[in-house]
Image 1 (cartoon, rainbow, N blue to C red):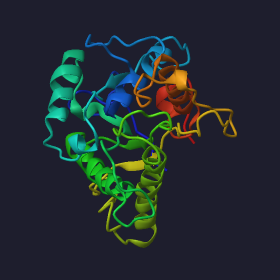
Image 2: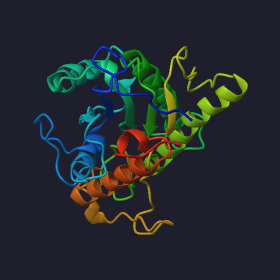
Image 3: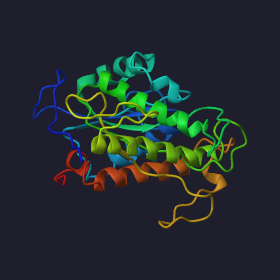
Image 4: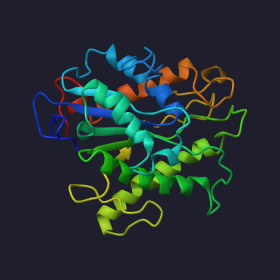
Amino acid sequence: MCTPGTPVDTAGAPSAAGKYVLLSIGMSNTTQEFCSQAGTLGSCDPWSFVGQAAADAVVNRTTLAIVNGARGGQAAPAWTSPSSPEYDRIRDSWLAPSGLSEKQVQIVWVKVANAQPRVALPDTAADAYTLVRQLGQISRALKVRYPNVRQVFISSRIYAGYATTTLNPEPYAYESGFAVKWAVQAQIAQAAIGAVDPRAGDLRYGAAGPAPWLAWGPYPWAAGMTPRSDGLTWAPSDFASDGTHPAQSARQKVGAMLLAFFKSSPVTRCWFATGASCD
């Protein structure tokens, strides 16, 4: 288990007056659920995760800065290289104008997928396996861009059984959950036995490792109107006309899941919630 140490200043040095930066990266669904940002710095819709967090008195408002780095159209390949212009955009358009630096990013929420998937499991060429490889690359890219990153939480797609396009329908939305599982599992196995996963690549974490610590974020998939054990369902009204992108109600659902996760997780509540401690 890994937790951030202390807030840091813009140079990356521990400082009681510094910040923990929680950053999102990913595609259209990611930015819509995390912030629904309309291009104004620091402005997020109230039903998004950031909007809900801003209204919650429990959330740390002293040393925590929440930044939405995700952007529409930026699927998994856009994040696999540390030289991607997407990381430059985050630095120049969101971090710097807020008085923050890349060295203050300690936590990242990742939600990515691939457009137009074509091969389902259990085929050995399944798109889910491609996503495992990309998640490994993204993890290493994050460590390069954000040298103090300590925690990366990965979530898979919401339900796509109502999709009217081939952008990312079922079963690929469901199978992206396996990709997340296998990427995290690859790091756990490498830490235990030292073997590098042939798809995910080297995921050693810690000061000398090329990757941050990986963990599951909230799991937002449910089989349409069939309730899962916690009651989560996805109705057609939760989606835009393409059946793929979340409507306001879906953005609110995922935002609430993120908020509950960060407030309650034994590895996040110490930096996310006021007066809490991590196990």
